[in-house]
Length: 253
Image 1 (spheres, rainbow, N blue to C red):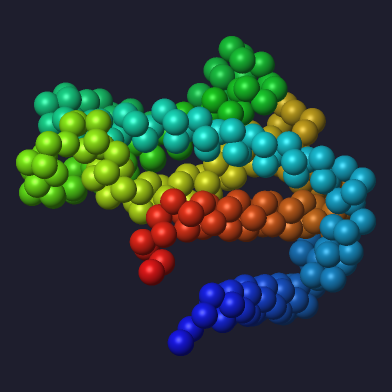
Image 2 (image 1 turned 90 degrees about the horizontal axis):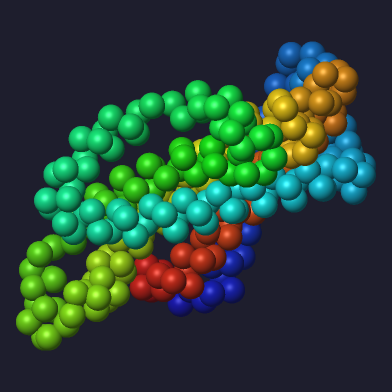
């Protein structure tokens, strides 16, 4: 019988093995290229340990705050709307063409406009990320709500359930796995977009730190910033997995 402790140990072993393989590949590539722009892992890790308490940690926290707030806002706006559109065919028929027209537009092109209106602080970066991930979450949630079998809803209605109870006990639980998939995709998008937004017209964040160290040709510290971004994504993905286990325990039985 496989216990929870065994599963945890196996997962830790997988993570540890993945990290070792990644660093071995990095070491091999650095030795192969012999270019100062790609330092070896050990100098980069030493730089990470050295600069994290001296400023990199602050940039890490600022970027993480921006990503989390953007993700929560995107979810709060997109999930309820996606659930409702997915269960209202007439509304979906009217809104879908507009979604298909707006969704492909590269929202990153609006960055100068957003900076001009909302200045260069946290708000402008959060708005940009929300604009991008909103549509990713909305379309995924709408499609998930569409897939709920009509027979399941009719059977619950026959028991006297109100529309609100249908959403609570049928539609939302049925859509949660795909919503969490959308969260993972949007999380990667949010980190990438934020890195770009922080690369100019700002003095805080991991994007700023990486480009500032690059301008000083300090490649070990630049890769310390890249390690910080990787660590940020890893922690946030683990957080999403943890929340999904709490909210969707039936997926892990």
